[in-house]
Image (cartoon, rainbow, N blue to C red; front, side, top):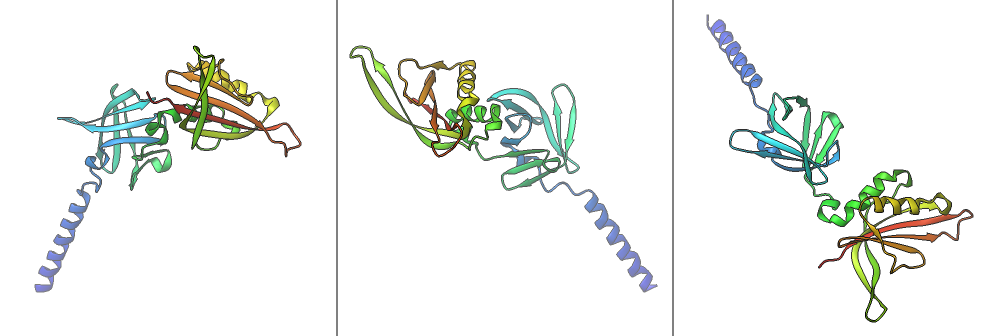
Length: 237
């Protein structure tokens, strides 16, 4: 009888253990995801996962403006997002340091503040890189922006230097990319600076932001290859 009682006790213990494992809650709770998540790969610019009195809420932004919102929660190892129209989507997910990944890399988000959010003057450079992706612009790098303005009373130029960021790419003079980028800036609210220009650079301004497009010829090349450099800076008032 003793072996039978011992065996029965062991079986009961194993059954209880399996039941507890099956009911175990995800190691990652909703509290682990609260805050702002910036898009590395996805359809919106950023997600903000928040908590109100009764539920967990979110909103997604594009260009810092909310475009979608709803509720979210973690359920059975799935990240569940419910839109305001009632549509629900479940994602498999992983969280590693400051990176949140949905569906094995289908969407990727990070807590790290992107350069264009930390420095607003970078946003237009990012937009140019995206719209002219075939040029394969470099990533934005810190750069000085040298420009100036005319003083009407003295009819003289006042030069200044701004701390900004720039992107660069190789192109052909005959491609006309500098003209296309110029039109792109004008379509986005920038005006051409016709009072202060240099031989290789054209300037554009909108409120307190200045962007220059500089084209320098590559004399070592047998073609009409040029270096195209776009620099953006803010005038801090």
